[in-house]
Length: 213
Image 1 (cartoon, helix red, strand yellow):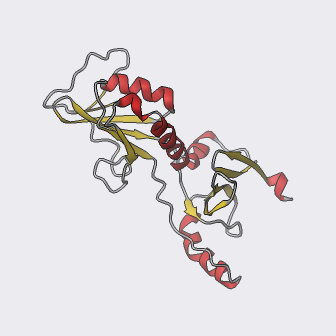
Image 2: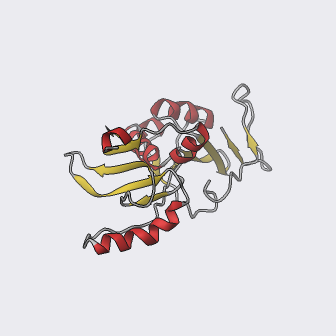
């Protein structure tokens, strides 16, 4: 079977996607979209590919790297050993690295808006999977937004930067480190309570200084 019958090609903003045409069950597809088995650089000899994402700049030129995902996510570990040898055999100067797959953004220094208002405004700017809110001092909050994968987070980062003034002159949006103890990569959440969107009267107390939407 040829390439066209196995994969489809598309472009969204600064990414060229090559994805499988194979029908996958929803649970597996969801797992892959969240980054399971993702590595830097590309290859296709080791196993069946779910997606290749080539990063390009605004002129359409390659930014020098790509992301590869296999349908069989455990192939990631084998690829980290196998692909460097294959590239070396062909005299290709291609590095193979584990992707950070960072998909969380930190919003802080928000002025005047309540957490509920921030939630509403951010939904208008770019969809997110989860929002965790931490009150680090009285009536002062940081907002951690989680996205399905790194691409969604990158697109959200750009969109939020363009609209950052909505949150005040001092508001800042930045990438949230996966190494931080509050990162969703380390724990599901340190939050004490999940807010009911039908009842937004809850105000964090001294005992409950974090909540999530």
